[in-house]
Length: 472
Image 1 (cartoon, rainbow, N blue to C red):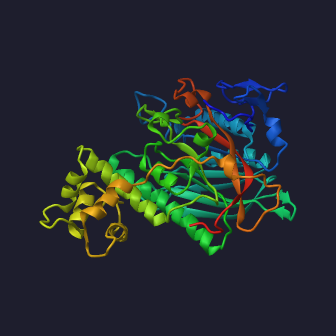
Image 2: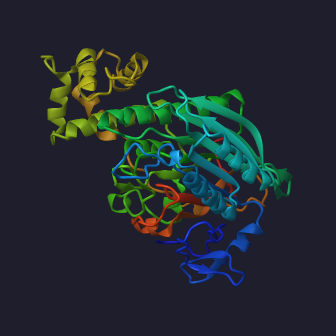
Image 3: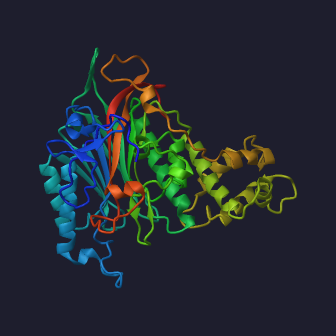
């Protein structure tokens, strides 16, 4: 794993598990990381800088889903109080030892009052404000977001119910630092938006568009909140279990919207195929391991396409993937799309039929009629009611290109300098770590028992940056 020289990390030793796997300890026993220069970077260095904000995202595996007997799949941990109580006590030990500014938990067992009380009591006593949200249709689990009130103030809290086939939900929090950054003009309040969510598991390829729509709805809601409240440009952080890897459509969609993965940025992992499986964060019920947990950051200086354009490109990339399964060339794909139409063009009807065959429409929770219209309008550029070959080539060649990771250090300056007009306070990614540490090498330790997910923590520091003054 590559760590930027001089990087600091806001983590302490875990008391609740045997998998420390640490790079080194400082003289007082606190967890440290070793930079490329070979120097220790202690937690105390970060703690002396109150402007740093740390984020932890962790799917803690609800006891109602945890299988405990391979021979009896119906037997769950929730049937044995001593099992789930002990495991969740260890989870809380780890979280409190880490003491992140913000904790975003998924698969939180909202349906069990005793477990909820345990988290409320222990996190509340440690100085956190808690916000919980159950999935719709009484699924039993949900989300828990904890904000440390000594360093952050919650300006607003919103809940988003997606009401889809996975009964998924999301939390949106508008947060402000308690101790604003100082410059020559005085106090500069540092504000940002944070989302906690858990996307649908991709049981089959037909659910790709469902998961894409879940993210699309979340980003639409964030945009609406920004517009309605006339917010100034500020960072947006998305935390959670995305149930999809770096090779998936959701990842590429978020990249096209200016978001960067904090772990990949901190550890210098690119969007290339070679780096796609460098790390993992989940072993699913099928026994497969993959990287699905992310802390996404979109700074206010990021250039972003219109949201609807990025969404359309992502849908087209799914269609492209289906067509390319048969190793189709550009000409063959165009022929499939136009169907029986004798004219050298794709009609609305043949376009709809192609989407139906790709299971993008005509299936439960597929694209709705308005979304189909939006897609058609994106490709019928001249508005003549058909898609000619030149218009089709734009679909074939443009779907969600990979963005090159920007050098965040190169475009940011210390916040303790004078702000100029058209500047905003964003975040610089200081570091990020996965636990247990074996997963950073693409391995899953067999004796890890806290969850079927790894815990991801990232540390950000405020940074001033120029921006256009508006965000899409």
